[in-house]
Length: 165
Picture (tube, rainbow, N blue to C red):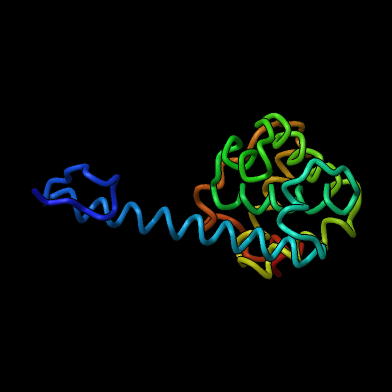
């Protein structure tokens, strides 16, 4: 009997499924690695620990760090429930509130928007354009996430706000 080390011990995996199983576990490992990396970058930006990020503390610094992390995780297409679990077992509705609160702050305070854009662009260049789409979506009074499946349609000058001449 062939046993794959990538599944539960003692569980049989057919030879044709082994390659898919290895790829699946590798992809999951890459996703978790990248989200942990983002968690560390957010913590470093705010000068806090991962335990602080996941705690129930309501200090302004901790709350802002959670909002930044929420936006980053949404950019990676994480579900609201998964983000809540990563942030110490919070409910998905709390994550929605954090997302909407951060977008509202970006609309109200240009300095906050600029700082978030700089932070997101330092992690991934495309995230700045995605944030702009999310903010415009929120300004129109629409809730939820905009359809960002194709960022190729996004104007490259969208983040800077310049118009083409």
